[in-house]
Length: 333
Image (cartoon, rainbow, N blue to C red; front, side):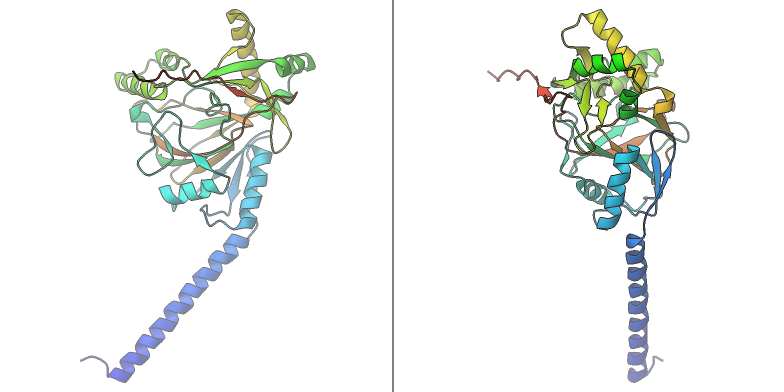
């Protein structure tokens, strides 16, 4: 038999009060967590830090976002463990805290999102040193990368500090770099890496397909080799694999200088390496870094999704701005 009506009402009332009290306690705990100062743990001498105590979302407390933003400008790349709660929607919402987000100019985003998805089975490997999308005059300022599917081992990512690289140049090289401009394009030789790495047929086919999409229209810009960071005022080298040639120089001279300055950027002292785990998120200042996704996992499956925050045109040390030099596509007949 069931309880008499009055006792049942009392039971329901007690259960409701208990549940409300529990929800109130959970809400208070979450609010206390949101207000707690974050713990910032540097990973190397020049770049990278792990952030503890943050639950990333579009509803992140303003105080915590301020801490994250300041830490990003200082450490260049930040890492967050245990962000399993993030969905595609909340990942994008968090990215919007840094500004307007944008899709890739040539690679279609997954349905209903603005992501760049790098799927190893479809040729998305990014195993070459680069700053993201510098073939656009106004290249991204911040990127937020989330691990979706990871191989059993391998697939780490390395970042390099381009401010430290500039500051480490001898004065004659600084003066030279500050005078140079480079042409950046999305049509660099993607084939070179996988020819050297003896890629499998699966990887080779995936890369060929990805390159066809990535270069379906050619986009080019002229960028200064040294640009002034718009928030910190620091000077940084602006190169990477999208830099095709230096303006005004012969091909052999351009190649030699690009190699010289790129090698300065990726010196081990300027780098940090991250070993991914499920639930990880990395955020980097694209104006002060290059990165390289290590391709050492064969045909295992690796998927990461990147939110890209819109940036501004680069400014050289003498106040000139980067320029879009993309040739307009011919009109259809």
